Length: 337
Image (cartoon, rainbow, N blue to C red):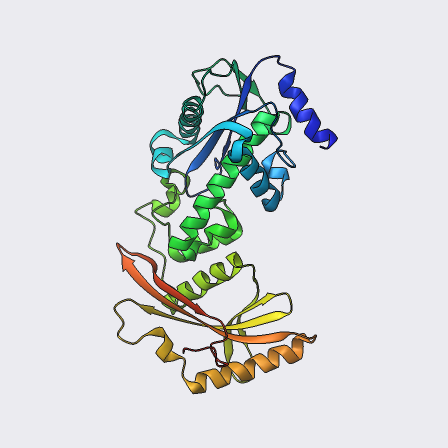
């Protein structure tokens, strides 16, 4: 245990009482819920690399999360939806999530903690004696553990929303107001899970609806496939890479493997399947273009020619994925198309 980790535990023990910690994740994003967690650490808990979740790598957060939920603590995790955020405001919604998380934790305990340590300077009105601690996630082990549970839980929800609405790239920015997020909002308009109170100009009826980009269905499929590749551990190094013979939709690397991915997207009502659009002539152009890329890239890269087949459906103006199939080695004897 590092000196910094030891100081977190010593902070809590200095109260001479059983304490729990509360923290939130997701107050600032433009989309999705706000999450909160309440954690009462067991005296003998072993939580690897415990720290303020913002200072931890995703891998370390996941390990700490698992250690907490696997018996390292009594805990509760809860959220307030984007609808509740719009109805009550973000502060009241955060307090609502904190109270839900606190009550969920109390339901698992025989006796309640004597004191709740809350990150911040506003009292959420918990059913416990409360101490407010500004910057508490960097001072208290209990609050740090709560920050990990809240952060990981919310990130997982945003990754699920990314699968439903891949055009917004939620898995990358988790709903926070990044340049990429604003770019996608301008291109597609707000989704059903965006916070209306955070995006009034996009929901203003006087604002014209965004113009759909050319080949919107194709762009949707490519972005969905890019997100899927990223979740599988690939690094997407090029999009719509053009050579003298044609274009490759996505180029993704994992180690020395470089995948040249042809993405075909069709609406559910379209009679022809996506696979039918990848004919021998198309495959030949992709292979020629891939050779150009490899010649420029250099090194001992191992090429593979893949296909992603995306079928979409549109309901109430929102496009989502009906089915998705990824075929590794599609052009070199690996089967369809």
